[in-house]
Length: 441
Image 1 (cartoon, rainbow, N blue to C red):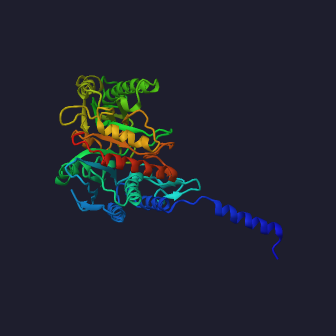
Image 2 (image 1 turned 45 degrees about the vertical axis):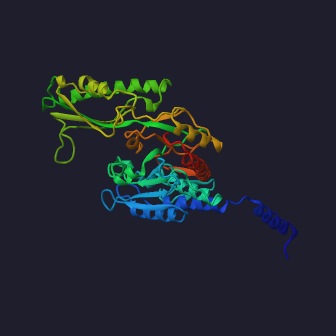
């Protein structure tokens, strides 16, 4: 016989359980799709592109009216998936949404949960490499279109909507977006507006990016008299390199002071961060010979330039101050992206009412209660540069607010509530952009 207090407790538990809010089936399915995609290991150096494309293709074909094409612009190991929602007026320029398939590596020992498990905690945080960068938007695009059609089965966009899933963004995009924009398939799409990834916001406003910084790989080399470790030489290789490192460090400090003082944002200054130093003579046991001065030394820098600066002025500074030939120094620059478009203009998209695409985008975000922060230059680099160089209006945007910025970091995660809210934002954006009927925006 059940005692009365225990029986009462059971009834109370059942009543509370019945009253607990249940996640709508569509939301639960969307979160499940997100987790499934996160569990596909697309991290370099061996990204599983085939499984990722197969999954996304199956997801896209489960949505009415979507078409898919898989392109191989380099090798079969680097597929590019193109998803298309045909518009009613193909003469209008199309809309292209972008997401990259690949991710940066993860160090499992530094994570709370395995980085490809997509483990969801009790508060709805989904831990996985790529959760923010940028597998979230890959799924949000598709789930937004699914929701639009579920709400209005007769919906047909006026402009054609394309979604591309590209390889190799994290390693420069040379076999991904760079090849795609040169293809006949891309030219036939007649893209009028491009929306790419952005970054999380730590406050209640969404961040939006109108430009990227352009990366340079800079290697500075110094030469000098080799000899016994006890001798004093003028302008030895290491002495020359140390002088150079000091000059570059002072420049970096001055740029960083502008950021710390709030004069400029981090993305608005030139960053020159040292990434390696190489010098010395290695002995047979793997150690350095301590009584010999080397004849060569070098330093490597990751340099990032905003589109607002003159690259020729920086090159002049490098030649005259950072690596002057008068001190037996030389340098080599690998420019990993342009700073000007095909007409010589800075790679920036206008973010005011003179750009109708901006106005439509902004109003679409606001229509679902979202607020945009002041448009920014992205401190890093994305595939967006391949569009801006062609003069195509381009914004970087990932609807993640009140979220720590964890791209490329340990324990990258995204809360399911933020993920689901982002789907609603994209529903509004997709409907607004695809219904924009101005023939020449």
